[in-house]
Image (cartoon, rainbow, N blue to C red; front, side, top):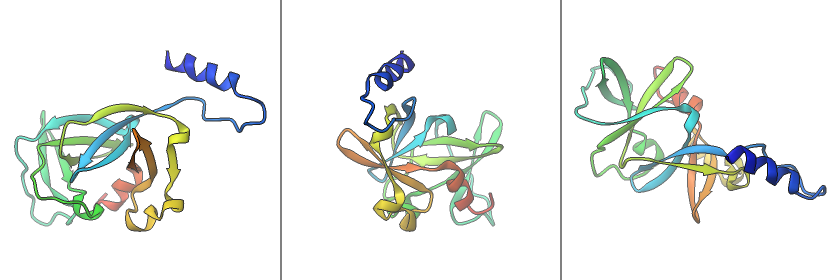
Length: 163
């Protein structure tokens, strides 16, 4: 249904307007320290409730431990310090993101939402000064009159030491 809508929108635009992307994107909205962030849904493997976190000596500072997810050991990253957001309350959930063979669980505050965004909702990171302060954010996305950081999963995995 969405692809039919995207085709109808692209064919009905006047010839003098620039062409928009062919299809809207689906994102997973996560909350970290009360702030909203978006992850391309193609990189999200699953969300699970944390039962326990096992610390592992010698892990990089960005990794807080590991969790057992149905027999698979998943490294867990707490992005709140890197993003400069509050980490007062312990996280109850994790979202597992994957790029290629690499995957990591990101500690999150609440159960995430799935949303559809359009190309005109995205703002580049370089125009907003986001790239310097938060290197794994590719830009900002406008969702219901709020701005959200768009997490670039390959850059995130590169920033998490040891990946």
